[in-house]
Image 1 (spheres, rainbow, N blue to C red):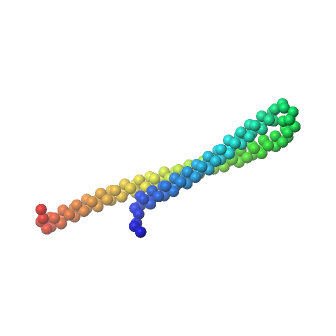
Image 2: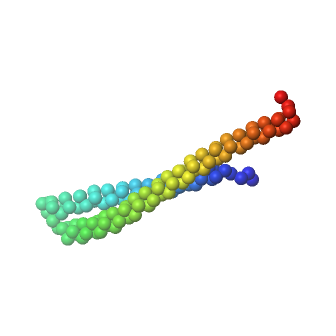
Image 3: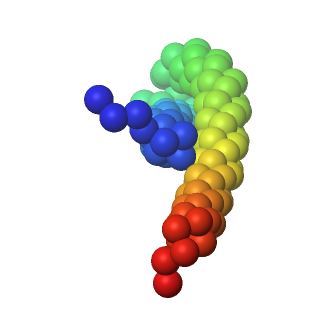
Length: 134
């Protein structure tokens, strides 16, 4: 198997890192959607709790318990959301650093190829001068 240049190895790592970043974004989006759903449930429950309808007044203790559970769940998801945001920032930073390293490696590889081409030209010129060929 041919040895891959450093820039290609780093490019593969960048692609993997971007996938990890996308996974973190998906987790964050999922958590954000869950928090939005909880907020909608809280709004409906608070509205029902404040309703003057006799049907809703029968269930006030149930609504109060539900609000407590929903609030606790929202606080938990807020913490999870912060963790996902941090993970996403970390994965993005890793990907950006790897991409910078890839660009540097590509520049180094191109420079080395140019240097080798110049060395080859010098060597050819030296051989031509040695054998006194036109």
